[in-house]
Length: 331
Image 1 (tube, rainbow, N blue to C red):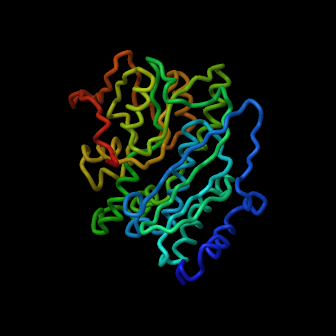
Image 2: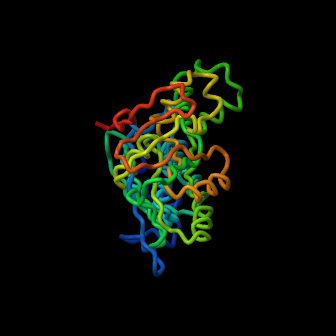
Image 3: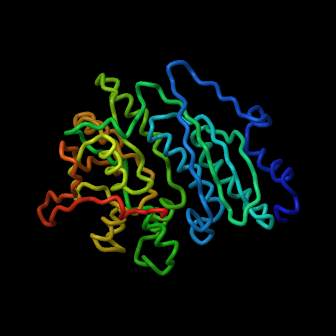
């Protein structure tokens, strides 16, 4: 059965099964917010052949990744997710099963964080395209901004980097990494197919900052790479940074399949790890890393200079400037 066989209304009836009945059906979804809180809104567009393909993800995992990307943006702002809307563009001969699997993947990810699909739109297009808008609530004094960082603050990565890029390589080249243990191979592939937005970090972060009476924090997610996140926050805050290559959390299994330099490149520029990169006072950062564990680390410190350096505390490698254009660029 194809989309053209059931038409727009038939497709909408299928998609509405994934949304709470009390929310969908009108021209807008109405989502009440509480006093002293702001509504955080983010939109992400995904295009077949650019952001996903059946070769590496399939519809279920493409849907999961689409939802995770938007939830990660909310986490990067310190926001609690409320709902998402989904605009879907498909060709008339797209298999209905493909669309349903895509929505199942989205729903599976969203349900973990109690986030409903609150509606959207469906149109015809020669290229499958998905635009998701996510809504979240954030307390006014807990908004994480890229412009909040100060000099002599720690830079925290909440988890491993390079795993998603390694997983993509394993999916693209099945003969690659045959020496990996089965568990390590599966872990790297799932890092690419089913990334987990780090909303779990926020309650820990608020607890630490509340106890310290400190609420200013800077950060973003690392969807475009660890280097990109560090550079973007530093630029927005008017600070520089010194990042220690030996402190960057990289999965140990990468040493089994690529060189140390390639693993570092994937960690810095591979992207799609969907961890948070947070800038905060050093003492608070140490507490946060201790509480999160599992690959989190202080990877550097901000400076008064505008330069952003990758250094080596072991003294083996020369320092060099991190550049933003080495990561993924659409144009």
